[in-house]
Length: 222
Image 1 (cartoon, rainbow, N blue to C red):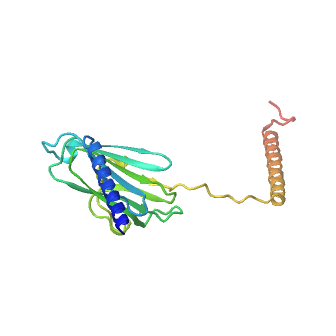
Image 2: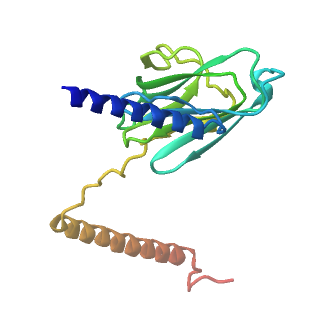
Image 3: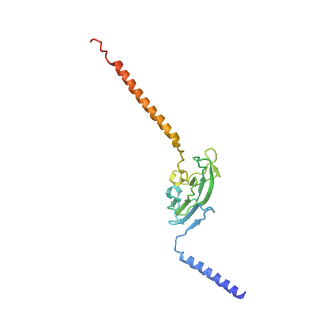
């Protein structure tokens, strides 16, 4: 028992030493605050404060954004050039759509909330899952179910910039058009061809009769 206690003590000292070393090594780096995603892991938010701490300003005056998208993710990068005088609580949400061409009603699938106030960069990353969903970063209410005839979620964080949201997985593979069986297709082709020949012959006959009716008679005198 005496030896086991000493081993545990030595291990504890080693853990403390490693933690102190890690803190000392990162003391000069920028502070990174991570907002952990939900268990399903389709939303992550990383906040990196940087820049001035004063004076403060209003969100529309100092907020900038950029977005990018690939086959796996949709990213929204939010930059605050100066701190905000009043904090803003935003939510990154995923709303699931019914699919099969239907957009409504939508169900809240995931949500991660975060606060914007310090100057710096906040990057929101949505993971595409292949099913029809809507990615939004917004403020205000996030009802469990939304539709034009039901409740609606709060406004987008950048209300006049639709590039800050995205629909994913909406356009599936093209519908399968059933092929006409070959035994049925051949008789149909013959019928169409015969109808075309009949129409052409009828047109020529009518044209000939019209020309004959308008031609001057041989026995007529000028």
